[in-house]
Structure formats: C-alpha cells, structure tokens
Image (cartoon, rainbow, N blue to C red; front, top):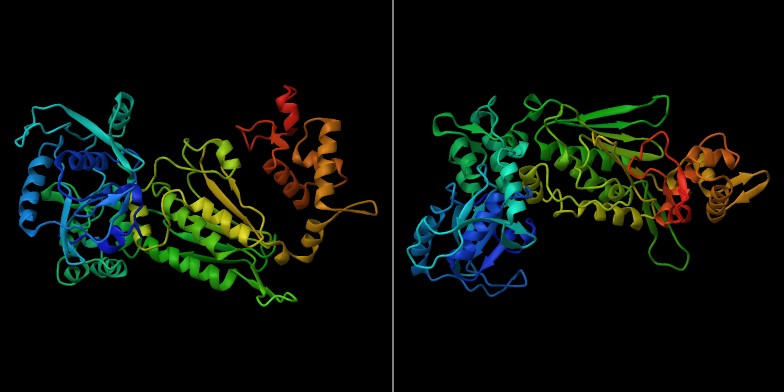
Length: 514
C-alpha cells in the first residue's frame, strides 16, 4: 500500500520530526515491535511515527548509501511482522509499504496513534516461535527512544485510553461521500505521494481508508473529523466557525474598518488569509544607507512571524469550540487570537518569558497534514521562529496573553516603530518632563527610582508618577524591557491579568519585602 506522504521527504526528515522516525538496518523483531507499540500508544499525541527497515542510522541520522534488504527476505519479513503484531494487545497492525530507494529495497512502517491504547507487547522473544504467554509491557516514546513505561506512565496511558484527540475522532454526523475526491488528489499531488496516481482511479472510500481518514465498524464506516477539515469544501458546516476572520481597523472609532472571512479546507483558508495579509496588510520600507551596497529593508510586521503565528493558531485551536480565529490589525499592532489557551504544562512564567514548549498536542492529525504541506515547522519551533523574525526586523518582541482559565490565547505582534503614526513615534522615542527630553534609558531609570521611593505600583500608577495621565506605550515597553533584564517582576506572577497586579523591584522580592 502506498503511503500518503513522500517517502524521500520522510527518509530525509523534511516533513516529520526526527523523534518520530526510526531507522533499522535490518529486521530485528523485538526492538521493532517495541517501537510499534510505543508509536501506537502515542502518549504525547504526536501522531504516531514511522519505522524504516533497510537503512542504517548513526545518532538518529540515516546513513547513505542505503543498505537495503534482500529481495528474497521481503516476503519472510512481512509474514513475521504480521505474526509479531498479532501478539500486541489489543491487536495493532501498522501500514506497510515496500519501496525502492537508490535501487535498494526497503520497508516503511507507518504507525498512527492508536484509538485503543494502551497497547502492550512481548518484552522479549526468547524463541523464534514466541507466544502470547510471555511477559508483556507498555512502551512509550521519550524523545527519540522507545522505552518501557514505568508504573506512573502506564497509569497515564490508561487515563488517555478514552481520550482520542478530537481531530482523530469519528464524525457520526457525516458520511464518507462528504470528503471530495478532488481535494484528496490535490493533497496527494502537493505532497508528491505515490498514492496520487491511485487516487485518480479509485473511490473516495478506498483512498481515504489508505490515508487513515475513516473509522468505525465495517457496516457503518464514517469519516474522521480531520478528513472533513481538510477534504470538504465547507468544514464550518460540521465545525461551526471553523474559519479565519481578518479585521483591519485603521481607526479606533471603526471608521474605514474592513473585515475578510476565510473559509474552506483548513489549508486553503490558511493560505488565503496569509496571502491577503501579505498583499494588503504588510508594508515595506527601503532605506539606502550611505557607504553600504545593500539597502535596509524593514516591514511593519515581518511576514515570517505572521505566517508562523497564524499557522500555529490553526494547528492548536480547539474545533469543538464554535469560535473563529481572529486577526485584528491596528496601526500599532496585530493580534491573533484562538481558543482555548495553552495547556497547563505551560506555566504563566513560561508565557511571560516567551518560552513555550508543549508536551502534548491538541490536534495530532491536523499537525501532520500542515507539516506535509510545509505550512508549519517541526515540534515546538513556532515561538523561536516568531522571535527570530521580529528581532531580524528590529521590531519589539511579541507578547503572549491568556487568562487564568486558559480560555483564549493571543499573540500580539507590535508594528515596527518606523511604521507607527508620527504622534506615536514621537512618544516612543522620547518622554517630556517639563521641557526636558528623556531617552529610553532615562525612562527606565525613572521607573526604578519611583519603585524604590514609593514601593510596588501598577503600570498605570508608574505612568502617573512620571507625569502622564495614563499608561503610555513608552512606559509599557520600558517596563517590559526591565522585566526581560530581570530588574522588575510582577507581584502576582501566577495571576498576570489580576486587577491587583503590581510591578515590584526584583531586589525587594529577593529580600522578602514583597
């Protein structure tokens, strides 16, 4: 059976993270079965993984030229593989494809996350004819390794037994015919899958079954949610408000505001929204620098940051919640909001420090499709990409916001200062106290002096103490810079949006005067 992914891209780790791929130079039943069991258990909702038999590896990197398998051994390996997989409890059979790379035969196993976890398999095969009577254990993936689960991890697997990610669940209100043959073929062509040619002559059910987009008993096969999200023209008919809304609000009063709504398969609406933002929202300034051959190019908001932020919103949104992804653009910033917020494995401190590493993914299959289409990068690379893009554009760092209930998540991308309205630019660059102009460094010193003199204050109270009627962008940015430098902290770091939140000198916290 052909795989719905390009095998060359898979082998070279272009679309699947290396931790989800194992290379085996030859058929070795015990470790291969352990890895099949670990990928099927999918404890972190990565989406399972792949085992490539016939390619050696060194430190996780495939070695070329390909070793390959003897043609005479292929049939024997397939029979033994089926025999060993029958020993997994409950029974689990991976998708198997035999293919040729550089003239050598290899076998590729695709092991999607199973819907009957936890799975157990024999610990060892002391004889060639191992039976189901030997010791069995659960195996899981830790980084790039398949290891035996300990007691706590086994308990976690049992807790996940009935918690199949929403995108991988069967949709009882839809039919297989709701998935379009043309969209399936377009996807397979885009990812250069060997399954593409077959998709042109086979039925939707046959192709969707090979792509693992169908579930349920044989007498009542139904599409999975992810199949409707990518291969139906209007996913919002099944998942209300599964769309992207882009609002351009050039004036606080709403005058001149435009709103665009993007619907359709998730990959299409993402591409269309990004194309609109790139063509109509993002602006460029080119400045010729004396004595330098290359001109300086800066953007109001770097496209790479927008692309990553919006792609991550599509990836991590809950499609059980009937709310769209919204992109709000004002002269000062772009806000991208999706529901819900990050899971509790990411702390409030992680969010404040822009260090967000998620252990478990909300949508494992959506991520796979977006990666194969090269619309998102690998695991936990989104935030670093955004930070790098903003830094390279000489923009202020983005902000990440959520509430105590983690009911939403907003990424705020500040507009590059040179694109701000003249009045805001003037405020950003200087602060006036009487007739004296203050630099950013002087502003930060004033904030430290005020906190030393008056104790803990809110951001607005600091601004008022400096002579302003309300909190200004310059004061807000200066406070964030002081936080990044570790000079000030929030008085209630666990309640970032508390109305009682104050700014505190770090030295006061360390000395217990908090």
